[in-house]
Length: 237
Image (cartoon, rainbow, N blue to C red):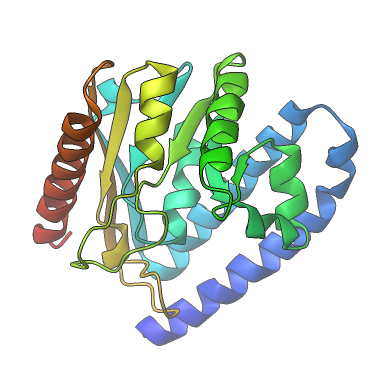
């Protein structure tokens, strides 16, 4: 039954992404806000199908820590779901993403119109400077910049590998850093099409204050996100 539901949801995901992605093409000629609202609708459609086809529910914890204005957010990344839920939860999300994704038809075009932050991982120092500059630009419009410090999706239980790019943002933006833990990989893994019924929790943690030393910030961020994520996974929701 899980296989059947998972296949049906995969069909749902690709069908509606293609339909809405095509329907959204005229929005590239309109102001960014139209695309932002359209992507929220897409996210709601994805979560509706996920709930009713596969039995995967979404729960948001730490509501008091969900930012509503300009904010830097560092989150655990276990799968595609981590890039869908923020569209629903946050007022005006902006993801930090690798440049290669801009070449994907429809997705890349819409994400560029939504002015996500693109980084060329091969450019190193130049890429970091551009990432900080782009984030400052997004904050002018009170957007929430989301970065996944590990840079790629991790399977549950995998050894964490937090990259220093988030530290550059944290230092130069001089803002608190919101943290998000999750158990999403238990229900929507990074690999394969199986979607396991249960509850995916996205838990917003108390933000780290601005002004911490680089090493102190990196250690505190990793410990808090990993400990909270591991605690969620141990609950077997």
